[in-house]
Length: 116
Image (cartoon, rainbow, N blue to C red; front, side, top):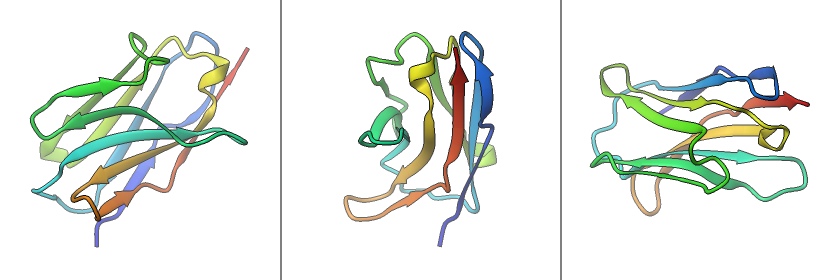
């Protein structure tokens, strides 16, 4: 069983930055994609950013130019650098590892609150 531990959330003023981390308890060699999702109260969970095994990266339109997803294979860790934060970015952020169509792992979630 793989455990994903998230960290880096917190309270920040609009325009500020945060860096989220997601560390895996052990290495997984057959990962289809690494993803960051977020969910705000009363809203659906949305995919914020993803990076595939070949390194291709995709972002939600709402965060393009502000967020950056990355990975460190040696540390079995993925990151989400969040810049120019806006109040609408306030949400609980979850990391996700997609292994197969039927197997995935989730982090416990970390709260990001952006004040105006």
